[in-house]
Length: 211
Image (cartoon, rainbow, N blue to C red; front, side, top):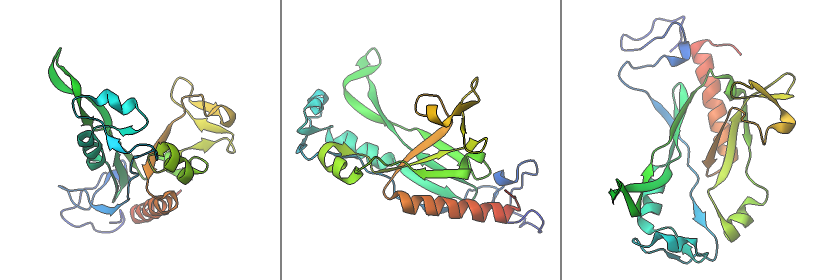
């Protein structure tokens, strides 16, 4: 779908922001599914905490209750779409119940969906932020996979774009300042970065958007 070519009758074109355009008016095409990171527990964790006693998971030899572990993993996804990337990084929260509207023992997965379109300046920089010795540390202490970070630098690479009212933050202060960034746990960081960059470049070329 190129803006300078006759588009199919069913296409949806947004003249003021071409990257928001879609091949189909009523659907968004998913072009690739990136394997998400899977939460694992340390080598000491050998069993699940009882459903009605989730606090036992504080013990190093126990995992969270089995039902919430499965629900959390089932809720995760990373989709590369025709014009953007979408992912769900769910968080665990208490389930609805009879104690002031909350349950004292049960949990559920709360969806936490994010979308970034490929014309966003944030896509100029995608890096592998996996912790050092990640495989070994995951085996010993647990982990959630490898980590990629999407952020944006400017001013000759000396500053990050930050959340207003700061607007920018020196690179040396990026760890403590509210910079604009997105972090995604994936199965393999190198494969995820390659797939996202290729999809971004193809979308920009298709839409006639120059860097």
